[in-house]
Image (cartoon, rainbow, N blue to C red; front, top):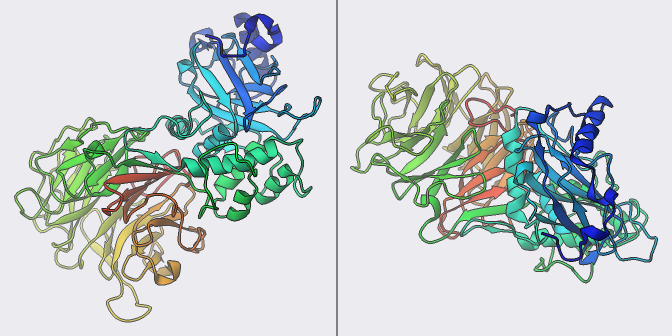
Length: 635
């Protein structure tokens, strides 16, 4: 199928590509010349499909743009991408159209690929070339491309790619991940296609029922890019449309093209927010767009909100992410556990019901991919239980596990050793279960019975000790059940001023508490000494859930401020805006928080105003290996 305006009979061989054999020789030659790819055996490659597309700057055709089809690398984040068309040269015609025959090789059918257009004339005087023009479209699995695949590259596909691939995109349009994080990379490509339709170049893309994204914000940033794309180019500080964009989107390496500028904006979403917005063209080519500057340049997708409740969401509380990047959610009401694919599509339209579920608050994924859920009160209003579900959503625990001192449990954490730690709120104790069958390791009263005041949360350290957030501070319990330390927190003012409801441990073993009552995030050393107490938004907010990303930075869900606050893992200083990120997103009383292997930050909206939803802040955090079994590590 040929896209309108593309005539293969009038297109040169250089535009169409090399033959299958020549393409294979070219790949081997590149490998031998040190361009970063390995020679691939024919059995490990897949012939590519015919592709057609067009390049637009705003709504103007871009002629003479160079087209590259890249395979994402696996040598590290932002490293190792390979142009599958090289040394062939593909350019756009006078209408901005281009064609690529199937004479290229996919390294594998699941290799992530993307198109990049560089340079060209965006509708200016003949002979004018904008060397600062770089546009991108994230396509996904190479094996999914077909002869009917039509692709638009414009500012909208470019900013969508920058947001979705923020943790994997390096300068110069190089996308790559570590060899151990192919799932995180592929899931990030899928997010790009949530944000934009690469066939039309318009936002949004393919969204599940009930899902919403900030398309007006995406279009607003695309309009700012258009002020550079539809110009002769420029450099930072020269007063041109490009120069203004590059000056407003600084980074350590600076930016000299539109893709790098977009990446700098989304990686520094709090910088020059109004100025970046105001740099947009007077006649915005992409609508609907914001009428004024956003609070920040973060991007969100919120899932749920449909009738009946999407995926069984019903007052969502804690979240956990499995090894495939699926998101599991404990629901306080409804008697079901929710699971979503990384695309945001529910695995089950109504969730996975459980006979033992009731007032569910905590959830964790174990080494086998099973989900463990704490039920503060079960269906018969007893003292609560713990439920276990298989990766396919089958309830394995019957009416729930109740041994080991389980008494109104509210939180759960899984350890790499197979231990499941339970925080018992009313029992003022901890329970320890074996993840192979749910049998109790702790005694009938649990560990630390009646010693730990009102436990709210639990996390496991690298030594397999469990740390608990308790009403007045934190406590540590060893795998043998010894309450080795108890750390009461001094009040900054008043009495009984602390009630931490979230706890996380960073890669250095430091313990972080989200203290809702005092509006603080508190850092303890591995020995339990107070290292820092950071007040959030002048004490006006109430941090609840807390998570640490792969770089060691700390993220606190601000349940009162409907946002997420980022703190430096090294200084404990707030490095997000004081009120946090995500104020433009439909976040409502966020309770749980989790980070996936793509760098997406997930929040559960437990309030009623937004209606049973979970929110993804796209590519905002450093990726984390999932499931979380102890302190976070990079995938």
